[in-house]
Image (cartoon, rainbow, N blue to C red; front, side):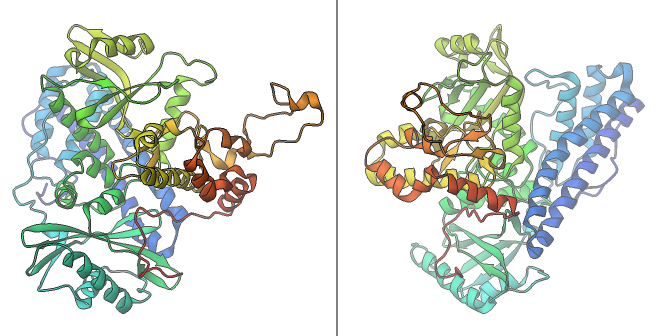
Length: 583
């Protein structure tokens, strides 16, 4: 296999013949996965050019399903090949060594390692990690994988329209720009304004990734400027308007770019011949973003899990590392604890659910899968699902461990100095909205509560109804965005039946404790939302002034009509430029 990329054969070292065949089967399944992954990813440009938004959404969902399909195939093939020897750990140790030699020099070696681990964990149902049969440490990067081939480099004394035009013209679109000269002039102006506000001076080195990032209705040109020893991010969001392709904004701060790559958005579709080098480039413009989130962002969420696990285990190796109770109100379906220094929440399904919750363990898991495959439009937290996790017991305060064992004994158990968790979801830690509003300055609280309404509307436009719209079920990210992180009551908005409460016909009906009218399982009465959307006071007045339509049946039925007509809404992870916007 060539060191420059992927291939279909392995150069295998000494290993029992049966092991060689099994490793070959795992490798073949990995290659099939990547062939399918790359094929779907390559369609993104055509979907964008043709404005095929429904097809783009379908591609995103289909790509997410590939990994499990091919791991299942690899597990079946390995069992057929190894048969009675399938549980022989000494054979698997030789197979891992064989596999490791076969992927030397590959630019996607870390992904191949993760795929191999996925197969071994399925075969052995591994609790914790098994150093004998799976990879624990990342593979070294190929010596020549410096990432230089990933981007175009321009050097200039200043940014002008000609430089911007060259950046945009390098992309081989099959449709034209609607107004290239106009856009290039405005983009150059906005870039210079951002650069002039910084202290650095001197010539500019501009690196722009060759591959375009696609998500929802947008395409994103990603780059960085180096000047005076500083690195400045550059993101140019592009839209496919009726007249052609247009630039929609200029983003040149770490916060702006971090939101574009935020954990509440669906994964990008972008060509990544050198995944690690691409992640390193992105890290250079988003140094606060975790590596695992960047792998997630470019679609390699399974390897993102691997990176998250490694960083988590490294953190827990610190003798002072401790889990803690989660802040906020106790949930009725999940028990939640945090690792504060690692900015993570851990969510475990309770053994039983109290009234009025009427659900099952499988139904809860189905909700999380629903979120995983849907367009999250920047309003639903991405959750990573782990099985058979093993933690040091010393990391759990005694009261927290007692709480977990009492609420989720079917999932959590203690084995000596280890705590084993059979099933858990991890999410980025956010501040519960009710606590945030309690402590925030009035102006910030007002902005946040308005974004809470925007979050509900964005999700509705994506055919998602949050069900419980209590403030405690939403959180605020470090960038101030409101997201939903409680999925117990999520459902398709298109399946809801929005109704007005019929007026009572008698005094008895008016004062009855129970509804005097039939309520179906899918019935929703928006008039009732006023009781729990926002507490009384100035915040409530501001909220209702902007989002009072949420209490109106017509708003929800109107969204349903748009969804039924096949409309795919515009949801932007950035502030659109007034100069570039075309109404």
